[in-house]
Length: 404
Image (tube, rainbow, N blue to C red):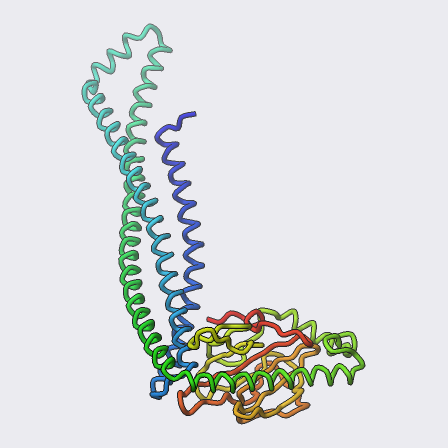
């Protein structure tokens, strides 16, 4: 089946419309990604400003720069993706504009031809003669209707041309707006790429300076392992002690909990991916699990049982859910740790000073537990945060809600 000119236009507009709808959906998703990247860039920049106040180069500063680079790369990538989508939209709209222009020209050509025909046959005598030469009344009537329909066709041609020209003007205006948007995106992409290059250069400089002091890094790594082992040991003791107290076994105390505590456990679990962050502002500078040391080649960092969240000096740490404080204890060289129980779940907050709670206290979501320690050397404030389900270590990033 062959499509006529009008059918071709309908198909073109349908295809173009579907392209634009899909593009709108894709661009909405990219807008969300861009907002998230910008929020993290803002956070890392604030923390880097504090780092700049100190001449001390540290692993935390390197991690902050790494996070800043990652956020900037995500932002640049979203701009690049949007440029691809916008180019697709522009090409599709240009095709639609060209097809509409051709249609307008065809209509005008047809209209001009009909005017010429009408001019050649415009004489009233010719029209009357044409009618009077009819064989009968029926033929005369049909000839009269033909002239009327021909006049109506000319009018519809003129109207169609006007409607299409109006649509064409709107399409051209939108196309111009899109091309301007493309230019602005290209400018933004170039500017962000320059910023990214500066961050990469700064990262490499700090990396070089840190590598020149490997002995100090190994000493800090040993201290970090000691802190991690101490924290893990204390949590394991709490789990074993409470399991024994309840008459259950380590890693299986849920059935021994009261109805209220079981309901709290269930509520906590149902909030996976929705828990508030333990700090008002910050970003993950140390992720869950095993990772290679960012500076020392061939050396692994201690297994991270949780995540490290870098934030601004003086920041408060807050409970992420209702619960009861199971333990508050000091770790030599790493300040205080607070463990809060939520049924058979535990949340752990470490590197705390100015403790605001004590063992046995009932706490509510958002309640201040203390302040995060700020290192006077590099002005870093890093909260170590863990989530356990009985004896199982969980990745906190899967439990916290996405931040803007």
